Image (cartoon, rainbow, N blue to C red; front, top):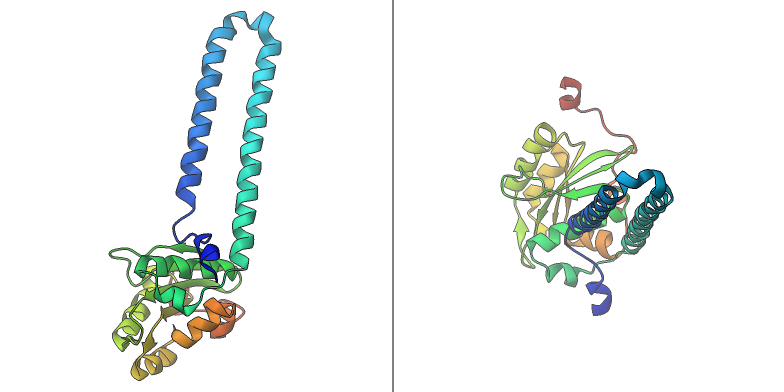
Amino acid sequence: MTARRRRSIRWRPRSTADVLGAAAVALALAVALAQAASRLLPKAGASWPLLVLIGLALATGLACLGLRRSRRNRADSERLARLRITLAELDAMDDQQFEYALRDLLVRDGWAATKVGRGGDQAADVIGVLVPLGRIVVQAKYTRVGGKVGSSVMYEVKGTAGPAHRADHAVVVTNGSFTRDAMAWGDRHGVHWVDRNRLDQWAHRGKALHELLGLPARRPRLPWRRAA
């Protein structure tokens, strides 16, 4: 990935700016329409053609906003579909950028994913949903190259994925590696792990995460769901 290509990928949420921009435009249109109506309503009998034109202009403006948003969303989806991130680029990120990158990779794979990681996140940094696979919780462990993730992380994710997040699948992802005990414990207890080698296959080679991990084609029947 070239430097120019990398700058085109946004590791921050894309919704806030769109919402604020649309709200500002809508507010300006509403104020203009209210001012025009206050002047014209007393003479509505004679001015109805002008009112119709104002209504048509407002409808046209809203339609243009919707079209622009649709085109922007389609362009974002097409860019994400081609998303590839090298290990070197992942290593150069900070922990927050790493979490946004994992979210974008899930979106590329077809998941409706959201970054939720913050203080008190109960071992969930990204949550995604994909029918019929169900709900996935991803715990991101950004580390220096050569760093290892231990078993305690696997215990924590196992303890919160179902009860706190209603997840069907729990995954711990690191740009480093896992201890042997952590991998063995995760394999026994259903906590998937993505180490540096698997991360390269997912982020750089373009293999979908659910294919890489061999997730079942249907959401599993879990005890917490039957109890709910």
